[in-house]
Image (cartoon, rainbow, N blue to C red; front, side):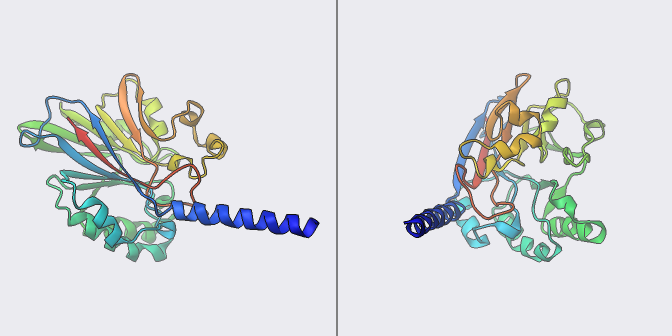
Length: 271
């Protein structure tokens, strides 16, 4: 009887793990619209493709599958909000994903910030990651900003470095930012709690993976900052009346499974 019980539990556990692994292949494509009437692109909305937390050691879709998911949507700008990888052997793998992103022909370019897993790399290995991004069409932002003109208006793309590893410097990132629409890219969204008096119009982030194992609740995220305790771990939220988005990420960390969460690709429209 005891042996039967153990075998039954083993079968159930194996089924749960198999289902959880299959979830990593079921990518959700979300579309978010945030109102901003004075920023337009040729009379249309500004369309942003947002990817976060690729975690190339544990990603369940290949570059061709990614391209099939994103190529039918028009893209003006690509935002990559960190945690690309944390092993130097994965750096060559990144280039193929960046190539398919570049092939969407984003009118205003591709921009990237770094996450806590990227900073596991040190010295020349981190520089190799950065050079791979830049060689493949990314502008990397480490507490820096870039201003581009859209219909004679400023779009300020502000990259705030990772908060949880103490690389963030909001003041430095904003130094010299002109008037305009402030789009902030960062990895750890907890930095938004320090930006109540900092002007931003929209902030894109990742970091939490939607819990990754979000059942019955993502208790393991509690140590990852105040936003978790405020029940802000994924999707669109507001703080101080200002909108920010937390992506569930495209890859996984630790074990390559998801329970109660799905990999995510997001298209944002500034409308």
